[in-house]
Length: 93
Image 1 (cartoon, rainbow, N blue to C red):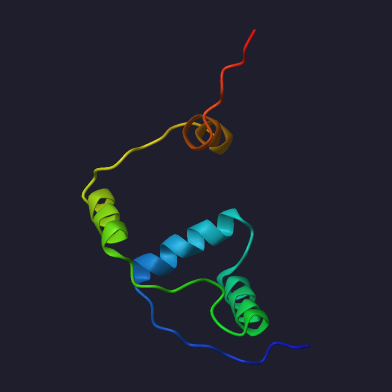
Image 2 (tube, rainbow, N blue to C red):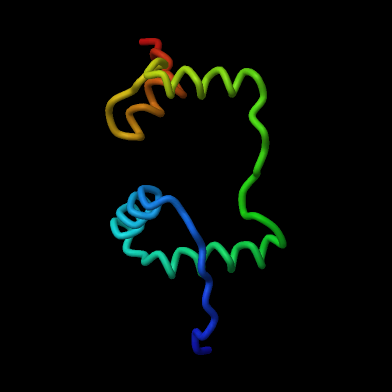
């Protein structure tokens, strides 16, 4: 099927540039990403993610992180998961 439909959207220039850099790293153009998003909208019959107003606890956490606070973790995803999310139990000898 040929692509003949056009979408024009106004977005902040910095957002467009940042998203473009991320998409380039994963090998997807902005047009391809929009097509993927729209296909998911059709398949899910709605937005393919939850859109909610954050509760008070989440809002406080967001504010803390935006102010430069909060915990930071370094290492690979596996290391963080193993050490923070799922601490290893010591083996009995």
